Length: 277
Ligand code: AMP
Image 1 (cartoon, protein in one colour):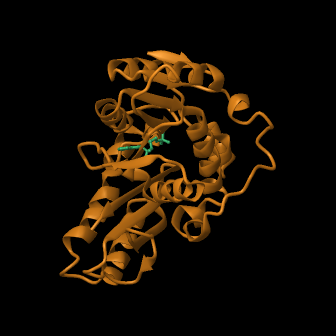
Image 2 (cartoon, rainbow, N blue to C red):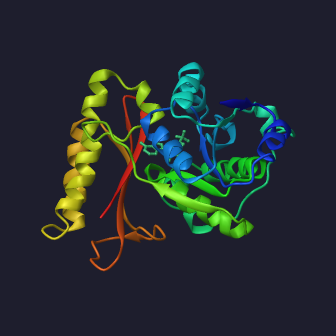
């Protein structure tokens, strides 16, 4: 596997290839969820390029940024084992040569007003900034994203169409632990017991899926909030939305593609998950 820290060196290398490039951007602390994206990118393209960059501009909470897990050595070992061709590993100065203040703002529109957009002001602007720069650096044909970050997928799809970039976006299913907990780099900050207990998040999402025809969303929502609070989960949002545009729904609508999305804090760690209905 080649490792590049500079955009110019990365591009000099990639210019030697003609076939499609599949790209998987990450913030490291890799787990099997990330690796599943790399494997797909590897299967479907001539080259699989991955990046590891903990993007400072997408953290609205400085403490969250400071505590973000970094496991570079094991990440590199996992990437080699997954036969990733190229790792792009830039420093902050390479991605933000003019610093991280007074940056461009993107027109994210409605998506920035709900769910993570509402609860993490500035987060999606930071995501757009870094994804735009990474796409300019890597110039991939196909971009692989995880459905675990459902809203992020829509924001990036919108960004790519606004910029008119010739990049295909493929969203990949969420990989989960045996108890249903969505794999996430942040899970490393949970205690072993906490990881077991956090399976409740997925169980809650599944209860919405299982009971769409027998219960109202409103009653399930109330019951779920009570149950999560009883298990020391501090819910930021638990919402039902149209899966195409994230317009919030008050009730199940059988003819609409739906998704239930949750963000909650548990053991001081902010966890998000979602499930299509
Ligand atoms: P991150 O390192 O958290 O920025 O994630 C990098 C990419 O991996 C994003 O497209 C995520 O949506 C995706 N991803 C994160 N967790 C999972 C998971 N459990 N299953 C599948 N993809 C994931």
